[in-house]
Image 1 (cartoon, rainbow, N blue to C red):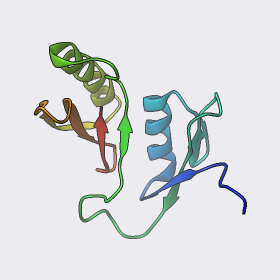
Image 2 (image 1 turned 90 degrees about the vertical axis):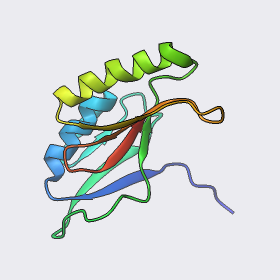
Image 3 (image 1 turned 45 degrees about the vertical axis):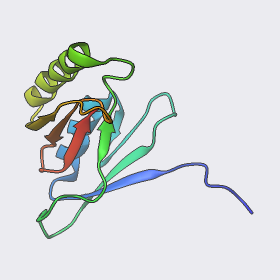
Length: 121
């Protein structure tokens, strides 16, 4: 039995190259047309395919952009807020800050340039 060696995450979208450009800036990936890849070869390839219908409901799968790993409390929130400001300048939308609740650490919910939810974690 063979094992899977690579995973590609595919997004349905209206403007594939625009969304690929956004995510390549967010993650520091290299963009090739409608896709972006991790230059170190570690992270998954992201592919953006054009579909005729628009997004209507919350996506069932989302990316967590890990910017607060190892940080807690206000230091973590400050790191999330700083990255949020950078991503808003790229066209992202801030949705809400979810504060630590004793089980989960704080995270910040955002939307990309086409309204797909993702978290700063």
